[in-house]
Length: 344
Image 1 (cartoon, rainbow, N blue to C red):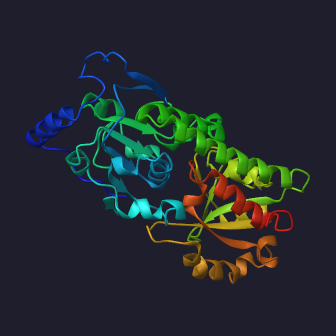
Image 2: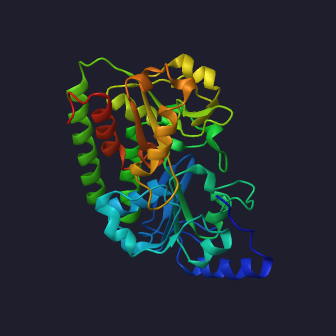
């Protein structure tokens, strides 16, 4: 996900004046205006003096969150979808400007945003390098407020997956984000509707699978060259599998979300089900994983794997196990796969 170079001094000054003009919650270094709303996100205070009107959404979870909250018309740009958006957001997304890859910092600021909503933490860097939009603190000084989804909270501005606190990885933090963003964008009523829908659907699945045996499930990135990459404990897939009545076979690996292990280790764990996580294209669906599924099923090294012998290697999408408003959708989907007799 390449991002362009930093602004040159003259252009940077121009963008600074543009962003300041778009009405951040406070002037750089100044105090919030009367009636401002302040919400803490990943250790940083996010203060707005009115609902942001020019929002840039980076990554699938943020794009779908914006649509779910009903602020599609405020999106001045969207970037880097891993797969097709959920059907209920397809029409709204069609009318939004879309970047296949993350834009450069210069391109981002050229959209004159007053808020950047990011589904993952790596878009912000404390060093402000070519691979990011810059630090959250630095963007805030330009009047651009920022947000990282709480289940991915780094412990300091600009840090990555290694700094995620596993305790933050929960649906409760998705609900907290919805409520806080509802306050910020002035759509608290809609936020509560989304939360109620998520809770109702997830509770319905949990009730159906409560007494069932809990199979082990591996979420696998389909690249078998020199080992495999699986979803570890901090990945949101751990939460979704648990809600669906299963156990992440690699939940004990907690160093980062995506963990590379040897083929031997994968075979040793011998998960009951394997979900093949695929990405990254705005038009991708589960059907695009057919060739990868076939390759796994015909791999001699995996012939004795329970999931292979029982034909329980299933197509999946990276978008499905990202923290956000797919929580209920993915819980239902996994439950249908691992408990087909209980969840239709």
